Length: 224
Image 1: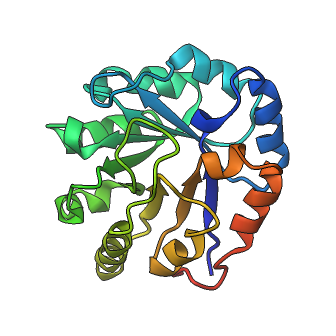
Image 2: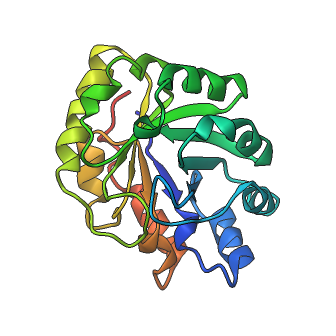
């Protein structure tokens, strides 16, 4: 059996004491660090760019799961890879030449992911799934942390898992938005592989304990 991955979202960290939070992630059972890049155009918020990612990478040893919530992501892929991105995910909604963009990511040596918004059907991934290392389902509307989980996402996870099984693929299913101990296990049972948790981790009294509890869930629920 393969074990699921936990990817705390640094967007919810304390930026007045970021080094401390990154040290906690380093010492925790977290598998990846999820990094949301927002441009104020595709989503109504701005986060940070390549220099901040590079600075975080210098003090955090976990693989960086970089989620580009930006228009024209193809202009910045090489720069984010150089800054330390290990996984680079772009949005279906922003890529008119999605296959080309996926190949561009892979050419850098990074893992390639495609994300879709809550209103977007998983069926749009049908012709690109074989090329993806990861498919990210947004379970909130992208742009802000701390939103409530959209439970329609569970049906999308189940449908996407079916698509992956039928094609005999190793594509990971990642869930981003409103994920915490209250819904982590049901997401894993539906077929999720990677859980992004922001507020549930960084706003907790004991963040590393939350990560450990999420990591221990659903150990026998995932496909080989």
